[in-house]
Amino acid sequence: MRVLATAGHVDHGKSALARALTGMEPDRFEEERRRGLTLDLGFVWTRLDPPDGEHLALVDVPGHERFVATMLAGVGPVPAVLFVVAADQGWQEQSQEHLEILEALGVRHAVLAVTRSDLADPEPVREDAVARMAATSLGPVASVAVSAVTGRGLGELREELAGLVRELPVPPADAPVRLWLDRAFTVRGHGTVVTGTLGAGTLRVGDRLVTGDGTTELRVRGLQCLREDRPAAVGVARVAVNVHGAPDAVLGRGRALWTPDRWLLTRTFDVRVTGTPVEDLPRETTLHLGTAAVPVTVRPLGADTARLTSARRLPLRIGDRAVLREPGGRRRSPCGVTVLDVRPPELTRRGAARARAAELAGMTGRPDGTAELARRRLVRRTELEAMGVPAPAPPVAGDWLADPEHWAALRDRLGAEVERHAAGRPLDPGLPTEAARRLLGLPDRALVDALADVPGTVPLRRSRGRLHAPGQEGPALPPPVRSAVDTLRADLARSPFRAPEAGRLDELGLGRRELAAAVTAGALLRVADGIVLLPGADTRAVAVLRGLPQPFTPSEARRALDTTRRVAVPLLEFLDERGLTERVDDRRRRCAAGDAGSGGGRESNPPARDPRAPRF
Image (cartoon, one colour):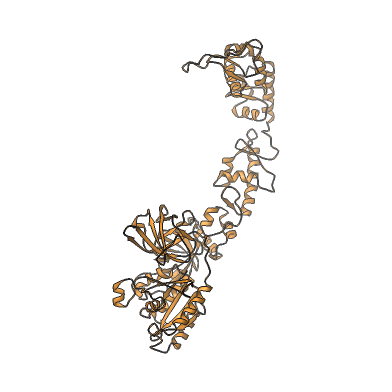
């Protein structure tokens, strides 16, 4: 199926021509038929080459100046038009405004029909209209003189329309859906039905869509194309969708249904404006996008660029075309709008607007993944694709994309920060991953881990949530600390299980940081807070405890190890945690399986422990 809209001045025979081409009545209301004046959108269709040719659907729009907003809702979602000018009246005011609207939207495909050729010579009007249209985005167009009354030229017009359809680009069937609604109504026994022109993608019965502010989810219960039930519809197509789950208040002309998580909702976006200097735009105007007409505030940035803030959030993508038009009786040419950025930066600092205008000057509105990534530096792939921009490269971590130059600079900075941290804190050289994330201003710790292992660079060493420079095994103890640790090691060599008291540690100048550095360097073994022994003291303690009758009490262990209760209790817990010893009951332990000494045997049925009893 292909979908076209009509365009042209009021009373030039658009509806009569649609009726003659399709045999269907485009005017849906009695008042329209009684007055001979189209007031709302009409929808009719035909086969171009019956009986099996492709369907052509026509969206018939009103031509009266009071209904230009309705005309915009009709032509906004469609890719081509059937432009109508009457031979007996020639080019008129709304002919010109409709042409300006098509130019603003960037429409490039059209056929000109000069109607009422039975009432006047059509050639002067045809020559004038073709010349006017050729000066716009439509370029040279095919033209046909027709009469809906006599049937003159209808066959030739159908041939030209068939040729136009063959030239139209075929949209991707796998594109995410965005359906702009032109009608919403209730059918008894079925509920809410909405209609619109599906521009791209595939809509299926059972699909989940969102609408409103992006949080209202609904389900497609039924689907029709040209009044026939379908399990699926592929754009471009006129569709009627039976939906369930959305309140009536959020559905209607100007609203949209779209694929969840595949579009970005935004109220603020930067655009390029054509047709009128930005400085001449009113501060408050109306944006026509798809079938929507939304009030917007205009903030000029450059000569042809501006920032628009809309009254409600809209599902937008880079490259979207729209129209700015003042409502009411003031006659100002409509302006074309091309969306350049749907996630623009805030303009809060002095000079930010000027810098932003310079950046926008180089933007085309054509989705360019490499350029967009260079501007944003870091962005999630799903967000970039929701902007309408294909990802230019695989993610560097998780779903994150990175500009190559920025990524390389981040890796250099990370290496420098790791070395700076080690130089400034020799007792604690490893830079915590979270600290690295904050220093680099990264949004995700996964990016820090990825930077540590960038291909083509010497990887940073990661240990216990910290980053170390290559070859950096542990803290480099300054000479005073090394001397104090050596003295402490000598004390422990004489009494291996008599951990130094706090006073002795203070005397040697070994505080918490110095002890932690010595433990990391492998010079000491930390048993508990404030309890340090020589490395290997745990295995030596087990060797001593093997000689005790099994099981043994903490007091027996304390005497065998020649230490104090302050050391014995945490040391036994330390051994328990490592599986070197194990509890028998609330008072006794034994060496782990295979470690029991000859002086005692295992108890096959140890007594149950009273949970209220102390551990020792």
